[in-house]
Structures are given as C-alpha cells and as structure tokens.
Amino acid sequence: MASLRFPFSFPQPPKPPRHSFPRPSYAVAASAAVGAAATIGFVAATRNSMNLLTPFLESTLNSSALLASLSLADNSAAHSVVDSRTGLSFPSVIRDSQQLLGIGLRKKAVLGLKNITVYAFGVYADSDDLKESLSEKYGKLTVSELQEKDFHKDVMEGDIRMTVRLQIDYEKLRVGFVRNAFEESIGTRLQKFGGSNNKALLRKFTSQFKDEYEVSRGSVIDLSKERGHVLRTIVDGKEVGSIQSQILCRAILDLYIGEDPFDRQAKEDIRRALFFTLQKELKKKAK
Image (tube, rainbow, N blue to C red):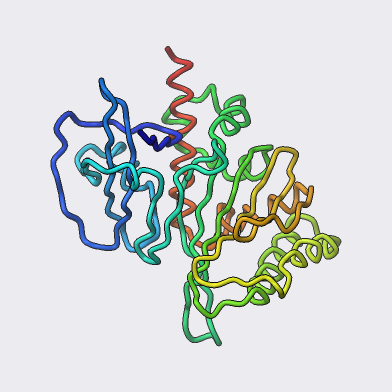
C-alpha cells in the first residue's frame, strides 16, 4: 500500500465530519497506519491562492476551524497533489526523500496588460537535511519562540538537498522565453548577493536551455540542489547541466522563498511546513 510521507504529522480526530468546499481546492491523498494499515485522503480548501498545506496547518493551529476532512482514497491518488488552478499534478515525494512543502504559481505580465500563468512550481526538501542543518541553531527554542522565526535565509544558505519543480502551464511558451526569464530574474538575484561579477555564471546557467529543447504545457523542469551546493538542471527527465555554486543555488531559491518571492502565499506555506518539521524534532528531544 502506498504511503504519502509529510515532514510533519497532523492530529486526526476519531470521527472527522465530512464537508464540501468551494473551488479552488487541492486534493491531497495520503495513507496512514492506524492499527492495521488504512489509506486516508486529505481534501483541503484554499483561499484565493495556490497554497497546499496551509489549510492543514491552520486546522492544527486553530481547533475551531476544521479545514480538512478525511475520506478513503485509492492507491492511485496517494502519490500526488493536484493544483486545482492549473490541473497540474505534483508528486508528494521525489528522489526518494525530498518531500513537497508547498505549491505556487509564476505569473508574468504580457505587454504590460495581462498576467499569464507561466508555470506552477513545487518546492521540495529533504527532511533529514532540514533537521540536521537547522536543529543546532533552533533546537533549543520553545515551540512558541520557534514560531516567530523566519528560516528562509538559513534554508537557502544551508547544505540541504532541495528541488524546485516547474511545470509549464502556458501553451505557447518557448524555451527562449524560459532562458530570457531566468536571465532577468536570476541575474537580479546574483547581483543582489554577489555584485556584478557573476555574468559568466549566469550565462553558464542560462545556456543550458538550448533552442532545440521543446517545452509545452506539462513540461517539467527540475532545478535540483544537491549536497555541496551543486545545481542540477533536468528538463523532462533529461539532465542538461550541473553547476557547483552556492550563490547560484541561493539565487534560485530566493525566487521562491526569499524576501520578494514570485508567490507570497506559497512562501508562507513553505515556512509553515518548515516550522512543523522543526516542531516535530523539538517534541522528540523533549521526550
């Protein structure tokens, strides 16, 4: 039986009521062992944003608002999370150990008039790496103190295996557009973190997106940060380049979880997921 592993666990009422929620919503299916193994699916409502985990976290933090309901789900649904705005599906776990923290959208103005959704993105992290990297600094804090902290800088700079998965939503997208968009957005971040002496590094990264590569709706681009701050770029399952650079890894993560992210609600969801990861670790130490 398939199992969906989150970096934290949620309290489960013995007899949860069933609710219906207005769209947009995310269908999150998971399996849990309760006595004998039982498969449980989560269906969560969202606000007018692309959030994935916030409803669960809010139901944990605010017992008066039950925003998640439990229902039986088949095994085929237990491996992915569907973004209801785009219909694109994100695996709950990739590379065996990297778990989904949040989903967001990258939108861009066309001719300054209309915002189009270019792609949906999912941010993944290895929970063991998170604990190893962050527990020393934050492990002595109480849960209430921990909740006030912002981890994004330490996550971006730490030697933590992470992946940003981009799934193209815009039908008319060309790889040249992707290359130019990265040149603009990552170039700004590289200048922010390291000055103007990183042009060669930027060219090395953007040159990976060659014109012969075809991208269309549903194409997947993985920007995967490995140990040692090595960035692997994978387009539709094919690795197209690998660059060792801490500042490049940080610049890319800054687009999604930095001070000025593409999707602020997604960043908040990811921050809360990180909080619960460390909260779980604190509870273990307290026992």
